[in-house]
Amino acid sequence: MRTRNIGGTQVSCLGIGAMSFADFYGPTTEENSFAILDAARAAGVTHIDTSNVYGMGRSERTIGAWLAANPGAREGVHIATKAGITRTADGQRAFDNSLAHMEHELDGSLARLGTDCVDLFYVHRYQAAIPVEDVAGTMGRLVEKGKCKAIGFSEIAPSTLRRAHAVHPVAAVQSEYSLSTRLPEMGLLQACEELGVALVAFSPVGRSLLTDTPITRERIAANPFLASNPRMMEPNLSANLKIVEGFRALAAEMGLSAAALAIAWGLHKGGHVVSIPGTRSVAHFAELVAGAEAELTAEDMARVETVLPIGWCHGDRYSRDQSVGPENYC
Image (cartoon, rainbow, N blue to C red; front, side, top):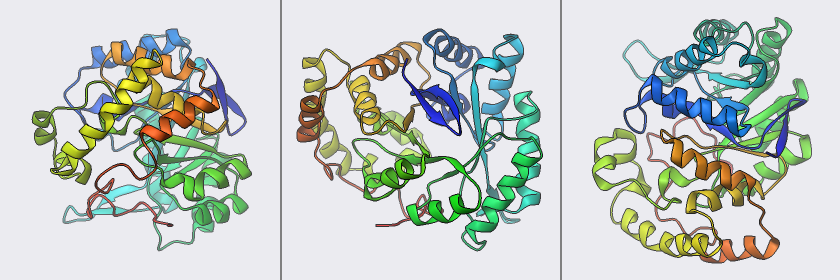
């Protein structure tokens, strides 16, 4: 499998988005998550991307249990986790990038993962009340303490990245990026390439819209996040499902599943892009691996973007409440 650079370490271009280990998109079991991790190891997928808030630590505990059950596996994987999202006393979502909070949360993550150091530690949401230069300095101190090897940010603007990177090297920026969410092309993709920063793309198959079996209306209704997501609400959902029929037909013509083509497209947008789809299905994971291994020509890329031109998707990627935290820059 092709590799990409994250903070001086070569990792697989395809990683695992481990939110799927925590029931976010549907119920799962530790056994099922272990099967995904086993399949990843066999396929040469080395990057595992999680967070302290995925299932309130459940995703990290699952990864830690898998590592404990597979002696020697830790040396072959690149583990990333995140912190910075918290709750106020009355239960409202808030952000805390202070050293005390970030170190305390990282210590908890290390305990759940069963390791003394993670390879990459992200600021899950940047707390705008603190200068990003100070936040980068805070993260740098955690590197100095040996608790993480490199730092990253999630959902920040290119200008914020440049300011942070001037204080401490930023290894990766995690952002939603897919054929249905092209915002990173408005400066973030370019800034990351210029600075030698990996762009870690989450939701690369558009929360199932870019697959052969998009999520059902019944499952959408049962999931609070999806049920309030504009792209998954009518009339947007029906419009989006109709449009992607052409994409699925094109993928079949190319001999790929729709998910594989979506992954391949994203990885061909830059040699610094790492794709982290999540899945609870070993069969679907195999499709994602096929996408990471697929070769697309310039003509192939043009055909894909003709079928799904920039701006095709109906509805915002987040609702107003879901948009609190990510930086808007265009």
